[in-house]
Image (tube, rainbow, N blue to C red; front, side, top):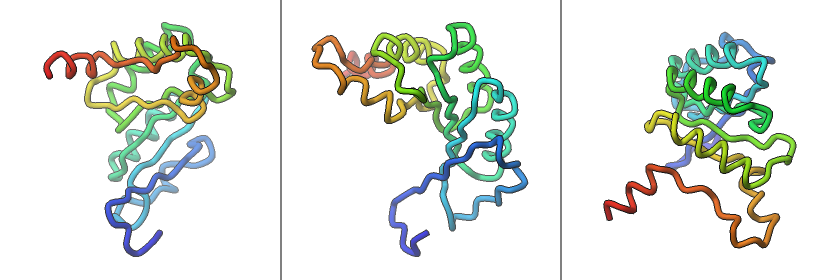
Length: 155
């Protein structure tokens, strides 16, 4: 890490199936502040425990469920509800295999926006953000959250 980080916050990326929480030092300001936890569907509960413990060590956690398109509506809703319980810094919608279409992103985003605690940020992975770039269709617009709509109405 550079000695003078300025206002930059660094992010560490972790596949928690390869590490235990004991491998993670307490956050002391000398390394990354954010920790992105990546995991498969079969690792949800273990990953939630890891995220919770990482937050208790002082990190801001980005919960990164791989292959979001592989979840049906009930599975995704259950996941988001569990995420609400531990309150990570953010929840990612990840297009692991580049298989999503705008309708998939819209479905997941709208479902997430309806359930996710408003204190938790939602983010699209880079591959998911590129989906709109793969089409020239004017109908391909990123979804707008309910919170953003409310802010516009209040302005």
